[in-house]
Image 1 (cartoon, rainbow, N blue to C red):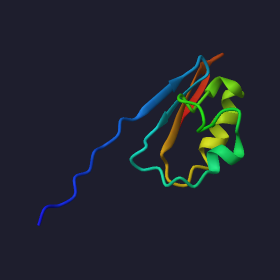
Image 2: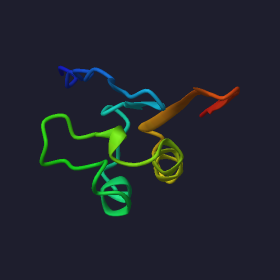
Image 3: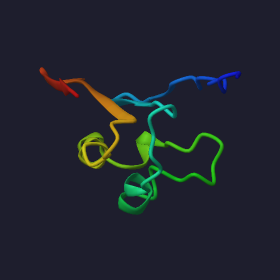
Length: 86
């Protein structure tokens, strides 16, 4: 019996001066937490569905931290000697 083939989708990267957001569609569970929580940034009706510059980097990071699957990740860029990542 043939096993079904899994075709991995590429990780998407969205960069702005303040934050880099990555999305791994292979682990997303489509809970909708991102879209319901911050629609200006996360809008699946757009081809490039993440517009990380539509909100302050810290706000984007806080919403990404709510992603239950971990499909969304972020890295805050250094500003005034401060920075962080998840």
